[in-house]
Length: 442
Image 1 (cartoon, rainbow, N blue to C red):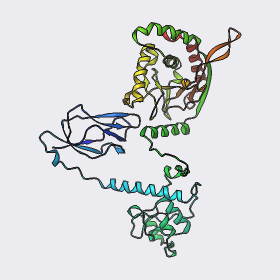
Image 2 (tube, rainbow, N blue to C red):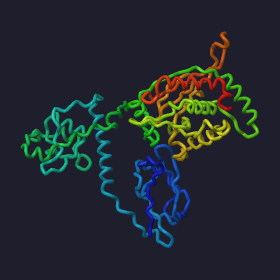
Image 3 (cartoon, one colour):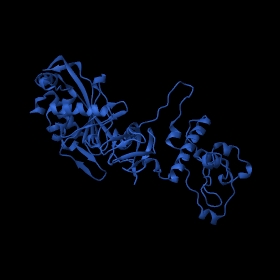
Image 4 (tube, rainbow, N blue to C red):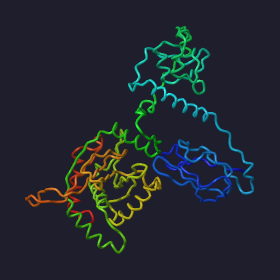
């Protein structure tokens, strides 16, 4: 009996994904553990392994397909002794065809909006256009067509649609005859078939305005980029940020780093400044537990361990692999883990448990020469530390003006959960640990 291979849920929050690449083709024989495909989730590209033996009889979802729902049959596997050529694909569900028609309609709707030559938001319609015909069936019309019909007082149930699946579009409303004018319906009929609310213009309709005469290229957003956009918008709209900045002298930390790297050279380990900052933040968080929290509306989660999410830039976007229990790990261990996690992140090979969770984040843009910046909190965490470049600056050393290597660090705190005084205490302790680094490794 043939086996349906379905789109797997590769993380607890995954609802759909992109079938990035097939590593097998129809007719290939696979056994348990063989890698059959690469699937892009909202955070990483992961491998899809076979759990049964057999022959790939049918591939139903082509590579590059995005928005594939979890549980969708993507291929058929013929078991041993079964004729792969005789295996039939399951019948497609009707909603899929409808979805395709809706996608085409949305594309046409965007084109209609562009054709109007206006980027102003839609004006309120004087009266809602009827959404159902005389026989009670729903009238299919684009939001733009509904708005224009309402402004003209046209009854959409009397207009013939020329769009996908009979959908009424702007051109149909423009060419509608006066005889299609809306008439007052009896009260009893209005109660029996109350008009449904007009759908709001999609984000695509409102946002895709650009001058097509300028040489340009349009690229489809990856699942990772979509997730970044959604989460950062959520963070800035719902989390009241408070920012606290300190200047930190790095000379002692740089000296200690040099000494440690000499001792670790034989083991092939080379500490970075970032490795030491991860350790310092973790120690500071455990010593300031009021900042190691998550705000949950009516509840506050306080963590007794510091798991640091570290921002890593990849070709597809920013991702934050986690160094767990960083306060209690040796610097050499943190360094080794970060190199492994960073390599996996750049190849989109992180596993969910390697990037999901974390109690606070660290983002370092010093390698780009950025002096100081304010980072956006990574929800549901309560804080993120933004680290700038270490640079030679005039500095008061032993009550005398001198020159020191100084960096600026800014903590972004969720003010719903963390008071300014508690955030200031964390930043003060972090500064002390970096300026006297023996305190974080003792």
